[in-house]
Length: 295
Image (tube, rainbow, N blue to C red):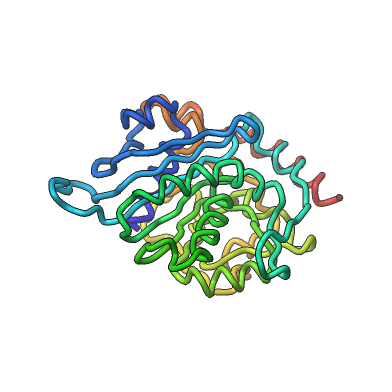
């Protein structure tokens, strides 16, 4: 869990002002000790952002040492109303890989491609240690697509290993994508929080399927740090978040392992409490998701 907490703080940092990311001075405890931010790119079309750097670990002496890992962090779209984003999400797929049975969400893929060239240029010059790709929300899907892109390159671009850990990831591709992803990236973790609405879409009935392996935190407030479930390798474990038929929470989407995500999470810790979505937002979310289920 220490690793998952470290990575989700990096995901939180992605929502902070770009200057703070580059100078590694973001507020709210997101700019973690032992990480060196080296690269950042933004896209105005999809309002997305990616940053990357080397992670030596908390409290590490960086002098003359190779980093423990290189980390790529994707931020999702900065949305004022997540439920409108969910309700308006399209269901178009694309098959951009050599195996044409593998299909992924077209919008998520196009968002990743807007940043891909700049990411690949950065990766050419980094130490070839372990690589971790992470992200939250739309950024989580982009992280999965990026990792899949890298492992399908010759010799994984030289990295010792490629792994993923994502938070609040929507369904990114179809069943064939799930199978190929599991085979090529066995060290992959998809963290979900209680009734988070975003992992519920796009619906399975439209041919989308989650990657594995899910880690489901089944309570809202993380009262117990070990209150999580390691799900089966199917990607759609009926005993994990799929056991909740009507999960419509924006609040749970913006709060992972005790860390506030979104732009509100970049305030000082006490101030950020005021930016946590309210129960009224939850009620609006239920109405929006009910509308999408009628489509």
